[in-house]
Image 1 (cartoon, chains in turn brown, cyan):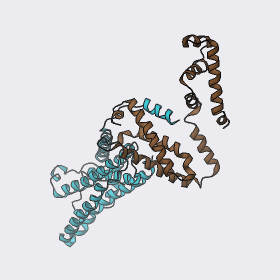
Image 2 (image 1 turned 120 degrees about the horizontal axis):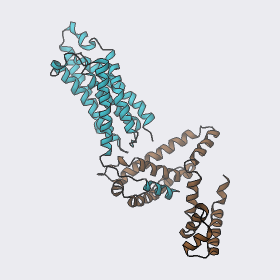
Image 3 (image 1 turned 60 degrees about the vertical axis):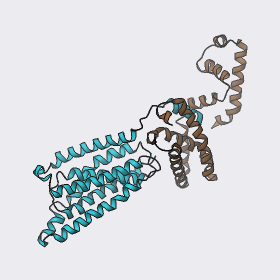
Length: 170
Length: 212
């Protein structure tokens, strides 16, 4: 965290992914059955809070105690909200869900999906389907034959559809 | 998705000074004090015989009482800027300070001749005094709450109370440069009311604006 506060993005990334594992376990253990689906949201919310409020970390003290205090606050907050939510009419819950989906939007979802593919395939799909280069150009710069590029893209897209196709109808 | 978020946050990383909290609170304090003092000078004006009053025991009492409460509020608030803190030590001293002035007020009242008693309790500005203190505290309260919104208090209402205590104490300090009342009982009653009122406003604001 000290390196992160000084601006070392690599150290920060390591710290956050390490932390997200701890947080996920923590929330899965602490959330009641009915809320366990929210664990991942809560992890992200906590990471955001840690990022936005990182100046409140006192460098003379234990980092874990600070992170834990934030995690605990977010947990209590989530439990309190869930108690309120039971009294909220159903249409406003739908609005809330709609709001939740907004910040990421299609671009964020697309990037996340592409991320599940092997790097090489991802690069090819990105160049041809998103940046709009021709198959011939991409094949040349990648040192592959045109048909190999087409096949790789086809397979990549197919695997995306099989993995995420089910979610597209929401 | 979490990995994405982490990548985005790491990309957004900017260095943060280890004195950032203190610097933010100090700037809120400076802005609030300047506005509050400006308000006092423009709306009320410093008392005309301020220069000769500066060394008087009643002025010294007002300054030390308000400064004590304001500093305790500031101490508690800056503790509670960080998660998991409750500013317990600072807040536990507050009753002692209030108790001290209450005792001093009782002694002053007991020693006063009966015909001056009404004067040292109510003076000529008893009812407006708490209101002026509250008004002069508002700039301080707003600036500290704005800054505290970027902090991470896990006790929003208590942090709001402390912010109000700080603002009330320092607002009363500013007011004491205008206030012509000499009585210790007056200060104990009406200054305390104004400061407590500000602390209660702070509690309400904290519950509303310091959640995150």
